[in-house]
Image (cartoon, rainbow, N blue to C red; front, side):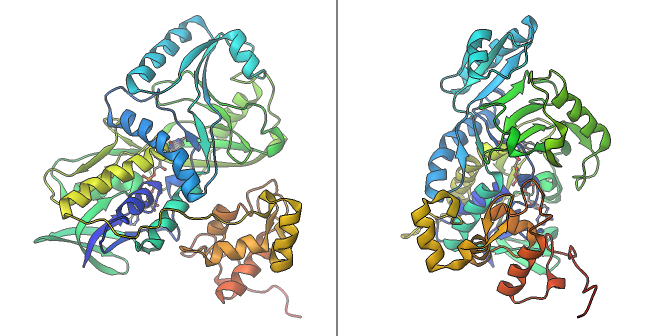
Amino acid sequence: MYDVVIIGAGVTGCCIARELSRYQLNACVVEKGDDVASGTSKANSGVIHSGFDAKPGSLMAKLNVEGNALLWKLAEELDFPVKKNGALVVATDEEEIKHLELLLDQARQNGVPGVRILTREEVMKMEPNLTDKTVAALYAPTGGVIDPFNLAIAMGENANVNGMEFRFETEVLQIHKKGEKYALETNHGTIETKCVVNAAGVYADKFHNMVSEEKIHITARKGEYLLFDKTVGDLFTASVFPVPGKMGKGILIAPTVHGNLYVGPTANDVEDKESINTTQDILQLLTEKAKANHLSKKVIPMNKVITSFAGLRAHQDKHDFIVQEVPDAECFFDAAGIESPGLTSSPAIGAMMAKMVSEKLNLKKKEKFVSTRKGVLKPEKLTDEERNQLIKKNPAYGNIICRCEMVTEGEIVDAIHRPLGAKSMDSIKRRTRAGMGRCQAGFCTPRTMEVLSRELGIGMTEITKKGGGSQLVVGKTKEL
Ligand SMILES: Cc1cc2nc3c(=O)[nH]c(=O)nc-3n(C[C@H](O)[C@H](O)[C@H](O)COP(=O)(O)OP(=O)(O)OC[C@H]3O[C@@H](n4cnc5c(N)ncnc54)[C@H](O)[C@@H]3O)c2cc1C
C-alpha cells in the first residue's frame, strides 16, 4: 500500500510529487497519458504571470505571486528555460486606462513588485511595433516566459530521482474509501493508498465528487492558438496583453521562451473534456487579429504560421484554485480548478500541498534529497571548441536529426535514457524540440523513429506518437 497516490502528471502533479519526494514515504504518480505534461500542461501560453490579474485575497493571487518568485530559482536548480521579458497590458482608449488603474491597484494588493503604468511615449519606446492605437500600458517587470513541458519534466524527473514512482498509461476509473484507505480502480488493477492527491486537471471535479458530498464543477474552457516561425519572433520583447475581459486575459501576442511568436488564446467553454482540436472559425478569428491592428501595428504574415494548437483551462465555477484536504473525505486532497495562472503557481501549489500531506501523515524529511538536475545537453549552447570536444567524445552530437531546431542524435539518445525517459515521438519532441520547428517534423520523423527503435529495441511499427494506439506506421510499403 502506498502512503500517497497523486492522480495526474501534469505540471501540478509533478510539482506536488517533487515537493513530496523530500519526505520519507512510499508514493506514486498515476497518469493516463504515456508521459508527464500530456494534458493542459502541454498546451498553454507559457507565460510566467506576475500576479496583477488575480482577484486580491484569492488563493490564486497568493500562489501566483509565490510561484513566480519560486520559478526563477527553480530554473537554475533544475535547468529548464525561462526568460524574464516582462508583461504589458495595452490600453487602446481612455476607458481602458481606467482598467489599467484597477489592475495596478490589484497588483499592489497582491504584492506584485515593480508594476507601473507607462505613457504612450514610454511604452512605444519599449515596444515600437505596438499598435498605433496604444494610449498607455501597464508594465509588470516580473512577467516572464517558460518552457511549460520542461518545467513538468524537470519536476517529474527530480521527483523520480528522489524515489517517486510514476505509473504511465494507467487510468484511474473509480475511487472507493475502504476503512482507513482508498482503493483506486485503474485499467491495470487496484491501487491502495492512505492518501490521494487529486491533480487531474479538467477531470479533478470527477474524482472530488466520487468522495465528497460537497460537489464541485469544472468547465473545460478551450483556448486556441496560432504559432509562428522564429523569423517573426522578435516582433515584441514583452508578452503583450489586451485589457482583460469576462472570459480571461484576452488574446495576446507574445514571444515564446524559444523565440517563436504566438497569437492566442481564445476562450470558449466546451462540453467535451478531450476536445483539443482547433476549429476553422477560431483560427479565422486569430488570423484577423494577426492581420489587423489588434496589438501590433505590423501585419504578422500568415505564411509564417507553423502550426495551430488548443488547450483546455480547468475553469472552476468560483474561479479560484482549490488546494485543500476535502472537508468530508479525510486524507483526500484536491489540487482542483488549476486554470491560468496554474503553470506559474505550480511550484507554490506543490509546496502548499506537500506541507498539508506531510503534516497529515506526520512525514519526516529525507536526509539526502537531490535538489538539482541537469536538462538534456544542448550542443548549440556550447562554444565551438567545447562542441568539437563533445563530438570527438560522442559522434552522435555531430549528427543533426532535426534541421529546423538543430537537434542532434546525442540529445535524442539522452532524452530516451534519462529518468522518466522518452518512449514516444511527442515525448522526444517535448524534451529536445525535435519536430517543433518550421517543418513540424516533416524531415526528422523517420530519423527520430530510427533512433527510438534502436535505443528501445522495438520495431518501427511499435513506435507511437503518444502511447496507446497511436502507432505511426503499420508496415513496409516495399520489401527490397
Ligand atoms: C489556453 C491556456 C493558456 C494558459 N496559459 C497559461 C499561462 O500563460 N501561464 C500560466 O501560468 N498558466 C497558464 N495556463 C494554465 C496552465 O496551463 C494550467 O493551470 C496547468 O497546466 C494545469 O496543470 P495540471 O497539472 O493541473 O493539469 P493537466 O496538465 O491537465 O494535468 C492533469 C493530468 O491528469 C491526467 N488525468 C486525468 N484524468 C486521469 C485519470 N482518470 N487517470 C490518470 N490520469 C488522469 C491527465 O492525463 C493530465 O496529464 C493556461 C491554460 C490554458 C488552457
